[in-house]
Picture 1 (cartoon, helix red, strand yellow):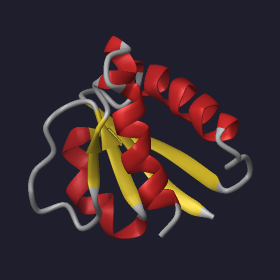
Picture 2 (cartoon, rainbow, N blue to C red):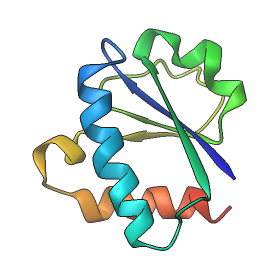
Picture 3 (tube, helix red, strand yellow):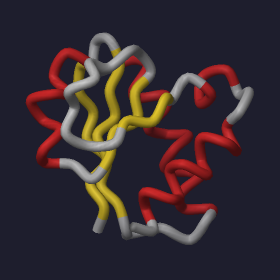
Length: 94
């Protein structure tokens, strides 16, 4: 079971939209039941990062996060989603 931290500015609006899209993409690729997503504010990432396998963020995350951070803007724009999902899948398969 992979623990995914999903961060945006407020921890609610943008991360909820990305959560829905990321969940659908992971299920489509056969990862149903193999992950848990937790949403937070980007300001909480560093403190929470030791508890997660990786983070998907829609805003800039401080460089001292203790887990890998993947940029999640493509989930909002629809441009580059496949490239981001390649990074996500790489982390899922570790």
